[in-house]
Each structure stands twice: as structure tokens, then as C-alpha cells.
Amino acid sequence: MTELTAPLDAQMQSLGNAARDAVRKLALSNGPTRTRAIEAMARRLGAAAPLIIDANQMDIEAARAAGRDEAYIDRLALNPARMEGICASLAAIAAQPDPVGAVTSEWTRPNGLAIQRVRTPLGVIGMIFESRPNVAADASALALRAGNSVILRGGSDSAQSVAAIVAVMREALKEAGLPEDAVQVVPSADRAAVGMMLSGLNGAIDVIIPRGGKSLVARVQEEARVPVFAHLEGVNHTYVHAAADPQKAIDIVVNAKMRRVSVCGATEKLLIDREILAEIFPLIARALESQGCELRGGPETQRLWPNVVRATSEDWRTEYLAPIIAVRAVSDIDEAIAIIGLYGSQHTDAIITEDQAAADKFLAEVDSAIVMHNASTQFADGGEFGFGGEIGIATGKMHARGPVGAEQLTTFKYVVRGSGQTRP
Image (tube, rainbow, N blue to C red):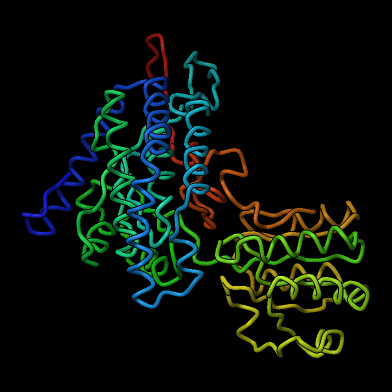
């Protein structure tokens, strides 16, 4: 990796050039070789887990000293169980079919030209993230699965953890005979490095993927001069329809909100049909409160549950990432869909109902990257989708949408085979 002796702009350009060179070398590799490299990553991370957790502990201590809240600490923390999860994710990525070279469509024209659309790597991925050190592992493995190289720029709070993870990933690449510079980390906490990545490093970076808080993602979307895969925030709704099974609704809502409150797939808003509000809301409220969740809402919900805090207009637009949920009654499914369209962030929205027609209407009309029926929004995750992991979730409508896995990290080219045809 680039040494710290050169000026920052020279360091960053060197990273870009090395990443571009690594992509060219990866193009000469095959799927089984990349599989072996990812398997080596998983194996080596498992063996190095104690050292990585020690490095992570230094990051946690520094974050606490800096006054970071517990939700932030939770996103930052690694422990044996989370390290096992990272290794399992990488093993799942290794086991996936190699997307590079896959023929997604083919046809023959009347003049005899045989045309195929074939998956190819995107190239160099710039990954800008904040506290979650596991992103370094997931992003590296997914990028490699799709034949890409990656430049990682983690937050200063996770610097020790990311450095330890990246060192292991690079050793795995070396073991497999692949270029170590397929995985690089920006060797500086200078915020100017982010701006340089957003500029594309003179054409070296093909796509930027931010993973972090709203301010980071907003900056990337505003300043990037290369394509961006991202979501700004996860203002996710769970809608309890009049035909919902009460116990199913309680179980799903509690899990969707409280399993992990700091993830982007957590439910932040609860909509309940007015027809069943008096019957079901107190049951849901009691279950949420028993796990330490604060409820916010209007007069209707306050009359049924006195502990409800009066919601403000901002509550309907806020991604809490905390044990807080805003609740409101709706007249019917059309109003629920309208509210989601007005206040949601097109990330993940769910309906709980035993009425298949209502479920079909919701799934068809809610314009979000992920829509669910009778399932917790916490399943909004590439690993849960069978991708092995994810490099992020995109809510845009160009190229990638929803969890971004290895397949979404490819583009395509057209391969045309002829037998001497000329165009008249």
C-alpha cells in the first residue's frame, strides 16, 4: 500500500493507479481462483479474530472517550460472535456462482449475427464508510467475487479495526496468487481524501458506495463526479392491516423495531388500520415498551396508551436509529400507501395482513427498493437475501437497487459474433 511520505494527492492517485492495475490483473484470473482467495479471507479472518478484536477494542475505547453514543458503539463493536458472522458471510460469498462472464441474454439476428449480453466487472469501487468495520471485509469479498478492486476509506473511529482486517485480506489475496492491491485502504484520516475519491482520482474510480450517516451520504451524493450506489436514510414503515393476525403483528413489529435499532432496516414508523387500533395497539405498545422502546404518536394513540409521547411533524420524517417508534392510525391501505410515499425513504416497507389481495396491492404500489409481506423489515440485508453479504443498500433506480451484492457489482458488455457480415 502507499506510504505516508508523499503528499496526500500523490498518495491517493497512487492508490487509484494501483487499484486500476489490480483490476487488469484480476481480469486474467478465473472464478475458482477468486473463490480460493475469498475462502482464504474467511479462514485467515477466523484465525486472526483475537488480534482484530483487540484492535477493535482500541477503537471502542477511543470512541467512548470522544463521547460517542451507545448506538454508534454498537455499530463499531466486534466480538467473537460478530467475527464468526463475518467469516460465515465470506464463506457464503465464496460459495456463490461467479457472476463474471455469465451470459444474461442471447439471440441471433436475421442476418446471422449472434449477440450475447455478458456480465463484466464494474472496475474500481471506492467504498466510503464510517463506524462499521465489518464493511471492510464484506466489501472486499464482494468486490473480488465480481472481479473488482476496492479502495476503502473508513472513519477515523474504526481505523485500527479496518487496518487489521485489510492486512488479513491482502495476505489472503497474496496466498491465492492475486494482486494484493485489489484491496487497499486510504492511509490517512484527512477528510480531503474523501473529496479526492469523489472526484474519481482522474478516472481511476468507477463507482462510489457510501455507508454511514446521513451527512456522509448527502455529501457523497452532492459532490461525487462518478456514479453512486447509496441510500440517504432508512425511514421504514410497517403497516398493520385490518386483516392482520394479532400475534404475528406483535412479533413482527417488535422484531422490526427492536432486534437492532441502529441498522438501516429497522422499522421507524408504525401504521395501524383504525378499524383494529383499539384492539391491537395496546398489545403492540406493551410489547415494545417491555423492551425499552419509546412510542410517539397523536391523540388517537395517546388515548389508548397514556405513555405515548406527542409526536411532532418531524417525527414522521426522522430515522431514529434508536429505541423510538412513531405510530399513527390510518383509515385504509390507500392512506397507508400515501403516507409511505410522502414520508418514506424508498428503503424498506412492510405490510402485515392475512388478506392476499391487500398484500398484493401493497407490494405492487409501494415504490421502495424492498417491500415485504408478513416479515420483519430487519430482513433488509444482503446476507438474508442469500447474497452472502452486501456492500450497501441502494434506493436509487439506476443500475442497482436494494441490497448490493456481487451480481450488482457487475455491468455488462455485448459480444457479437459474425461470419463476415457487412452492413449495407
